[in-house]
Length: 364
Image 1 (tube, one colour):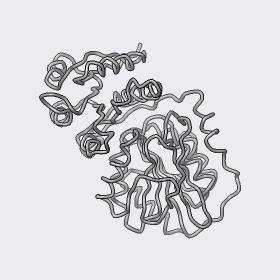
Image 2 (cartoon, rainbow, N blue to C red):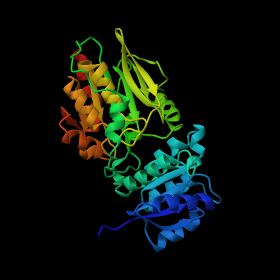
Image 3 (tube, one colour):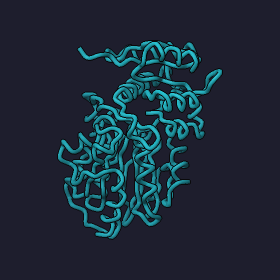
Image 4 (cartoon, one colour):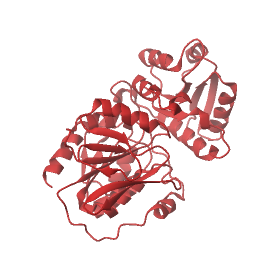
């Protein structure tokens, strides 16, 4: 019988500790091995028993969570999922936590809310399961690797409902191409490395990164300070332009649409698709319908199989498709599934994907 994933919950709020414990222990594969009200109590607990995953609050008495995270990663790396409401305000907390070595972040402010408990609980459990498989040496600072999560039986039905399948009519290739990228766990660092390598005249790029609501604006703003291309959180109707990158906002699906000779994005609500909103499958399927052979699809590190089906449709519509290789992935789940379904033309290390984009652009 497989050993359960042992989780240590670190939060100064007793109600949050109780709610998180309830959410996690409702999964038969997870066991809450203990709780701690601050980092000092957590440190003593870790001396007694090493957890597989830590959920860690940001703002706590005596020592803040990010300081504790940095100390932990320097002395005894353990996969950590940050649990905070501070990031909802769009501060730099997200980037500080990811740069310090957090595997992922969940919004504490929504945990237990009646109208979103089901979605939040599922995400909390998925993130913890992903973190439990972490290989922390595969990030620039500290990175993680996680196993794919199963997809609910209704996932494909909701994907079909969001967007009909491609018509099969090939679209004539134009002089412009559009790059569609999907990523999940570990993707914040992978995307930064990829986008930093693109020149200012790179093809227009649209990205779905699995990330909670409110985080994507801060993420895009941070990337915009580091990259030659202009990066922003997408707004409904934004054009896809050369030298510009649009990142799907958390909790909104993003679709690629063609308007005459140009592309633009459309943002929609709708059900979770492949357990996510935004969903990579939704973006990729829309690219297959709207861009065909004018598109390039890239699937990067991430848990689960979101994007695998959509990438196959892009491939069948004539798009050029690339998957990040296992050696450079934080999580090989999403690329692995796309490869298994036959939708990938090339498998490449992360550090050469940007160059492949430019080579492909030169053929248009």
